[in-house]
Length: 145
View 1: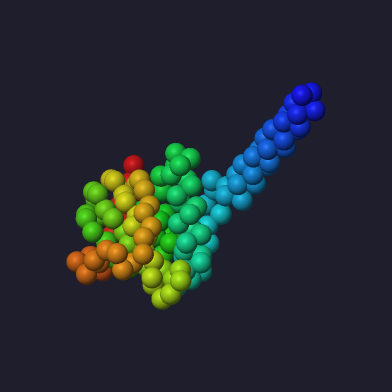
View 2: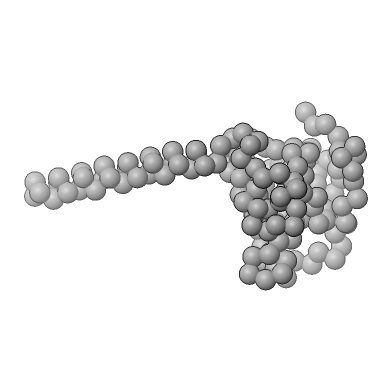
């Protein structure tokens, strides 16, 4: 019995250390600074970098930080489409390659200019024909507070 207890405690300690290291690595690899993101120039047209940047934005939502529209476009490039109003509730869509050509889509939900959530799905599941093509310049994007 004493042997089992020692084994259990050892396994528990190793798991706790591994979880702690995993969190430390996750925190180190995914910092909260803007420097963690690839620039717009490298994200534009590169699905792997776009997916990475979307994952970083998603982690920041979990951590309590909500990027604004200007930051999202800086990190992810110009969206493929949108629905809503630039000054109010807005959903951006980004198509990207996962298993084929533009076979996946990310829907970024914004409320009053700040990111509130990201949804991922196979692009064939939703009808995107009614979405509006992005036509705004950087000057058109308001500063959100």
